[in-house]
Image 1 (tube, rainbow, N blue to C red):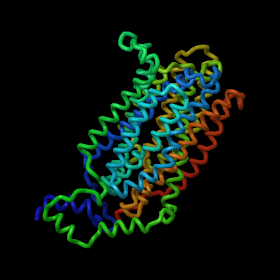
Image 2: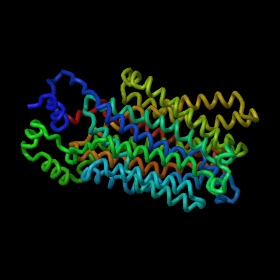
Image 3: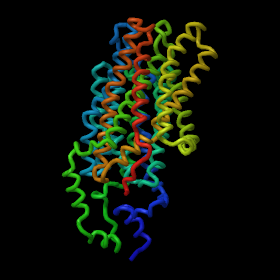
Image 4: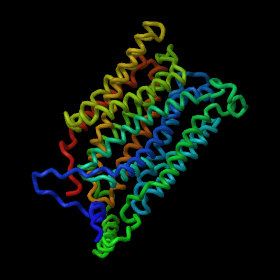
Length: 483
């Protein structure tokens, strides 16, 4: 018997032995190649999704939808940004359950192709409804996020799951740096490089270039996944024809039993408190986070007479890119140390408590600009303080508590996709309402001078208080799904 392969197959195909009580289970090494490919695929997603943020508000103005009313831009920008999550909320659970049947890789192929095509359509859209259709298509065809989280759960076990999931927010931070930088730099290329982009095409489609570059990155990710990423769903993996494989396959029909168990398990039976509480935290967290992320470029682009900073797309892209890179570096260097020091649940509670000062910084920056009359060192310092608070808030995602609790709550690996699908559906619903509601409240606050134009920030602070209470309901420790 080939003993060199025996440990690998048994670790992947059977339940690990439970160590004696009181003994800590040894940490399993991460499968570096497969996880490296997976997080590279994840990098393409935030680049594509955040690249539109620096120019979306200017695009709305140029389409003439608002009739010259700058205060109304938020209504339409929020609607466009919400439509992706509306489509995702309606279909992500179906994609997740489909991946439990046909495998993870086929669903990823559909998601990457759908995102690629929708980005190209977005760049070629010259009407509001063209933008609407392209964003809806992107949401309907995209189940990638939930499938990638499921694959991360299948590539890890209880000893190294935290280490694997901790890579996800770092990747999204890097994407949050590259996406806005790409969108802000490449938008309207005929204005920046007239010699290279002098044709009528670039005048008619001034925002096609950042969309095309994002689409090319998605194609590269698709090729890499097809060639190198292995299927992680046990019932769809190709068997390795060794004596060990034969010995395992000659055991009772475990795969058939697992499939029957999955089929007999209804979605309602999965809604236990250990699943519902983390999902509720994830839903509110997603709502508040996406609200902040759409308010930031909207506030930056809003004219100063309406209480914004009046930045152009390039400046907005630079500041958002700075936030992304600082956030990513901080997570990579300090996050693990902080978690070991105070624990994931306590870190999560501290992070969500930072949302109130994060919202308060918006009217403070507006007040400073009105008092100073121009963007100077005081505004720059306020922006840097805002960035520092935002990085602390973002550790709520970096504190992989939510993802770990959701993943660890799955009773078997065969329903892991469904459990992650439930979590992603709740987050997608929150993100569907978040942009439209936040930007509409922003527009209404400015248009009707509600609470001095700051009503949107007050409402979000109240919701953040609710999230802080939900965070306190999380269990202090993860349950070990292996046991």
